[in-house]
Image (cartoon, rainbow over all chains, first blue to last red; front, side, top):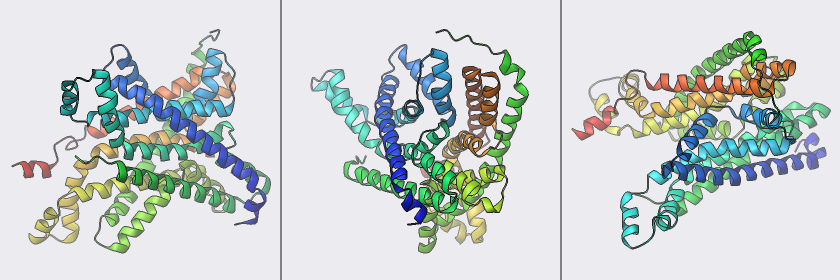
Length: 216
Length: 225
């Protein structure tokens, strides 16, 4: 390990912890919001469905950096509330990744055969029970590969939070570089760290899919 | 809500916005073409029968796409600063290397979905290997992967906004500049969000409406007959 990394290790590890925290908030919040959006769209809930469509299309057409700027600068000044870079980034990640996850969950929902719903209804389950006990579990299992690739994408995208001043892995590395000026060693270490963690996340996704896959 | 919307200052700065939009389009176009070429090459190697080729292509894909795009850009802009590349070139290199990994995966999957018999029949009918690839295999794979390539293209346009961080004067960069002068934070970011949205919409619709993109794949039709 290069000396410059060793000397600044606690600072960089604190950055890595912030990266993990942002990614975790984004994954949990984004998954919940994404599931809600997917269910609204799948069930074609009146009034809410067009709103969900508009939300998903708008967010998917906007760069993450712009979403973060909107959460950090534009929304607080428009609605007149105070925020900090970490909260704004967390909000931005949840809002951003939910739009992508919603589409992945929705295609999972669509891939569940209608016969299963009919069979569930025929055995006397209520439509709500059929959805939550039969359709949703299968849809989620089918959606594992695209959903995990979104999680990996989100983990990489947490680096963008450095632009609005969050001291996550990239942000703290840039600060260390500003003091030590050893860009080759520092950027290489950061790149390698992301590479290892993202590869590990992909492997977990593949393992989960292999264990839980439903083959049709 | 005490915020007073005022769009006049955005309109006064339209020159900057248009300039930024031009840079975004130029950056995306150059990076997209390069990413498609590199991705096509790596993807073809990844789908080849050579074991070494497949492993090398797999390594390339994993290494390129598991590093954040922002870090890719810093590699060229900061770590390799002694090369003294202009920011625009750094952004093109970063975007190309990052996106080419995704293109390669799509191309590899597309080539894999063309039945082996197609290439064998083409070779048996006397076509040279290059002809087999360009006249028989690629056209069929392209139709299958067209939607994925269209969505990768819109991804790339959005990703190009990160070039603003390494001082490329693209749309996002100009938005920051206008915001700094006018303090019309909400208006300026909504404006550029709408412009990105429009750009992504036009490009993805445009690509999908190219002739041949929306036809059912020829393979499917032959198999059905």
